[in-house]
Length: 76
Image (cartoon, rainbow, N blue to C red; front, side, top):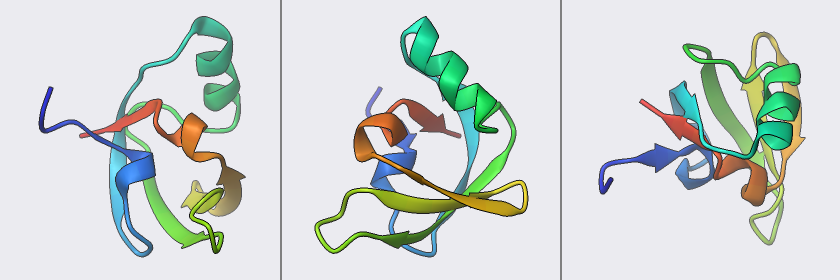
């Protein structure tokens, strides 16, 4: 899918809505436990100097993700 955008591709200040989690079962469960579920709005707050990890905001709190994890979160 050429138009597929993941959370890892967003720049600081951009936001999107989670459309799917494309990951193995254990990683998907972990991301869902952190609050990443379909239909949730997520925005990128900042990036580390080398671009990884990223700080994101969702559900009224912030957390950090590795780009490797953020690549699993497909936005719609």
